[in-house]
Length: 499
Image 1 (spheres, one colour):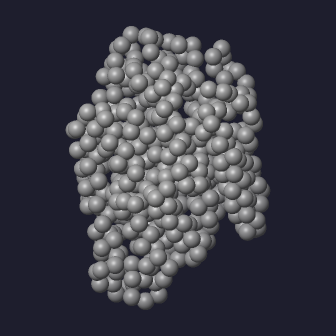
Image 2 (cartoon, one colour; image 1 turned 135 degrees about the horizontal axis):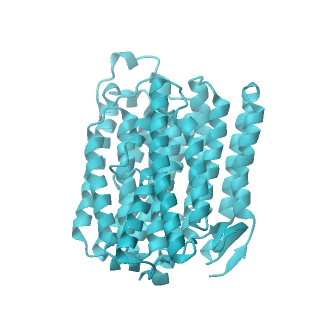
Image 3 (cartoon, helix red, strand yellow; image 1 turned 135 degrees about the vertical axis):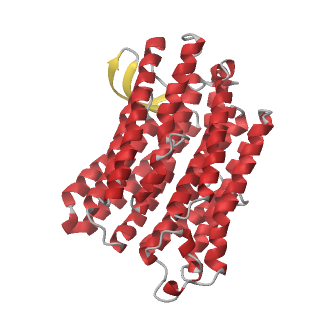
């Protein structure tokens, strides 16, 4: 592959960091200007990221190296198809989340909004740094930036419950970081490098038992942020955060970053051939399958809407990891593409949960009977997101889940096909009753008057994300070529020692 040297990755990162400073200095007294910086930065960041797509789809890799720490270890950004895929998703959804956050925070007259938008911008700075990281060292730096910047967001309400949720969040993720740091050290000792290589670079390095141990520490380290069970408990607890933060955690940054990092390790550090030789792919597939089944059962038991959405996220992220573990072309393509598909659909569902809370202060599913008659646009969008998560055509979730199922057949692993199909049944079981009850059950007395759609700042992003879930289902390469980037990443992986 041709390598192009450019400052664009650094510029894309600096946009949100600079915006965070402007937000902080503007403060509460000029909130219109403060939120202008938020919106401007989101549009500029996405524009810079999108400008790199044509080059990467032509087979180019964009590099930007700042300095070398050790021989073979640089602070380096390296934009390949997989990293650009995640960066495009995060930067695109940041625009929608920024608009929505303004409506949400103003609608509730929330406190400390400057701190909120400051941390929000830095969280996206961390997420984009993870996407563009050229090696494990750079990825680790931004991984920790993302963790630290999102802690104040999780604990934003400053209630005792919020503080507990924030502390649990930090405890889980920092413990995972220790395992990652250990794994990086072992990897460097074995190979003398930490650079990501499509198809992996650990083949022939170290004994089989040591490589199995290294794989376990990597997966448990990054699996904490990816909320693999039993490392998941921080995620439902973190739902005490404001809804835009929940959307950030699930659809834009944190858990998506965790899954992205797991896939980086699986496909760019170990690689398909080594995973097959050591049977590590099978262990990871069963680990992911356990998470899929158990999280689906947990989701069914939740009455709190955001907690049900949280366990649904755990379920769907494990599906992505299962796709990577199967190592077949369609499974890898479907797993990567589901990062974007799930992002658009799940952010729609969280946005709806926030709009309901702003207008009714209701959080439990049992309290929402008939609300669709009062907020038809909002709950109609929820129905679209729910059907997409369940893999209903022509929504975008159908494409990713079709490829995942096809990939399990390519791998000749029928048991994992059944796991994927069971996950779809769970999606139907825990989402469709919400849709039915909201439109077809009698409206509760306390919601018969005074309830209407939320402000346009909230409704517009909800509708936009729902529409995009349909458009990307009909044309998965619309606008930014998500499917083509996923397919390109798969071909690079399997064409570089993975086939």
